[in-house]
Length: 143
Image (cartoon, rainbow, N blue to C red; front, side, top):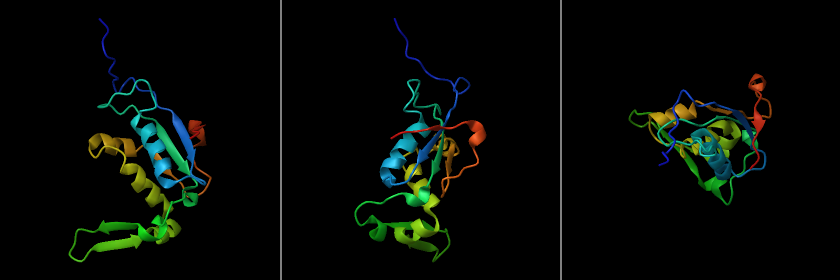
């Protein structure tokens, strides 16, 4: 009788991947990054263990939003204080903080618990094409 393999967090070997966001649609890029962070690309995937790899997203400022989302989609944040609702259009957000737009899209596709919080810590997003993680020897991820 064969038994189902369950990964343990001590056994997981993590790799580093670079995803280039230039000309990519935001949602499709977020799906790929979330799958790598979660570990679904790996045959040793275990739902209750963080088996994912590190992800570096470069060229976040060159990500595309399809349709009329650039003008109609809103980033809504509340400070927790009365009158603390802040609403920013994605056209402004993509000019000022494109890293936040990419991060929010990826975080929304991960589990909303402690496991998801641990997965987000392996995500790095950069506006331009340079990143300080050359020592980790990241591999380019092709979509």
